[in-house]
Length: 464
Image (tube, rainbow, N blue to C red; front, side, top):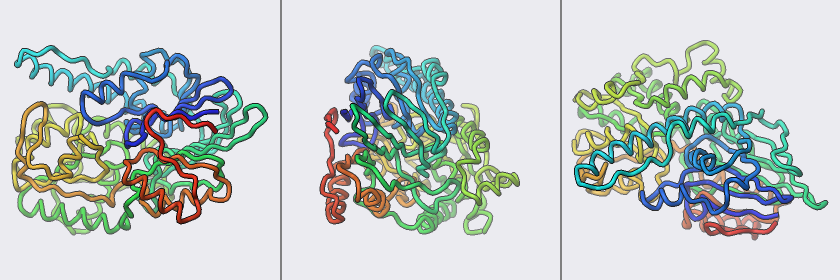
């Protein structure tokens, strides 16, 4: 029995963990690695194993850094089922199709620039048609319902509270008469966030693969983050500027809209137009309405009464066409624009940033963790000049970072999550985090009596 850590090892993106059990191969997640462009392309197109040899995939949730490389896996020969919660199936279908369109659109835009410089064109990482191939391979499962992805493994999904449909994965494994309980956290959510149910924490596991994104940082109470976000919006609007928010189309976008609706309804900030400029977010909101099983009780009541604050907001407009998106950048009145991607690497958000970054009245508001070398990280680091689509722009606008709006568990909850299995766990593998975060968390867990905690290298293997 072996785990091979082929992604999200010593980094946060590209989640990909290959299990070898009973002569079969089970892949946990297949996410896009996000970082330097050339390195990302190479990592995302070059698997360290033959995709044709994989027997089954289990997907923890639909975020692109966990699901976004499935089209390449299938292009290179994978033919098995992709096991997901029902909500993840529906969200992933629209997210992967959107990702394929973005890959094609960005390649087309860059190739126009390359042609002007006499350079050879680039190929998109994958296409919308490639993404559609994946959709037919999803096998939906209910939370806590048992299924058998490969012989000798009984799997169950448990609420992770991170985004719609997100799940921790319990694997009860039997190999050569030996029984092991392996728990894969996926991305761990937070308590008291709007919309979704709270995460289910593990109480028993022999081995655990656990994310550690915020292993060095305690999150503020969500209300404190909301107050900080409100201050940023109020300050920017009152000086006549735009608030530009790179946000994941599923989860973060709906929570931000929830907060904006609340603050404008209460009169805490001026009522200005709010635009969600992401075709994916439009489709995602429709999927949200179809999966009440993922919502907390308050949200279920709101939706049933057709008055949910993330879906029924008079100042809110979902832009659908490219023409509508472009028109926002020609306007000078105060507004809030929320657009994907969350790390400002692809899609319409790039156009909004390049058109607004040199205006000191505006604010770019970073509301989630940013991977190294992404545009989002360069903005969060307040670099004075950034490159977008191969051209340089001076940063004259404000940049605000609101860490407390993250959908990831902070340090306190990560410690609580790990210590829940203290009485049974033989080893914990920290993934989905940079070294500083992982080492800080490892030290805290050692102080709680958890001595066997490892931070595996990329492509490292571990025998269980």
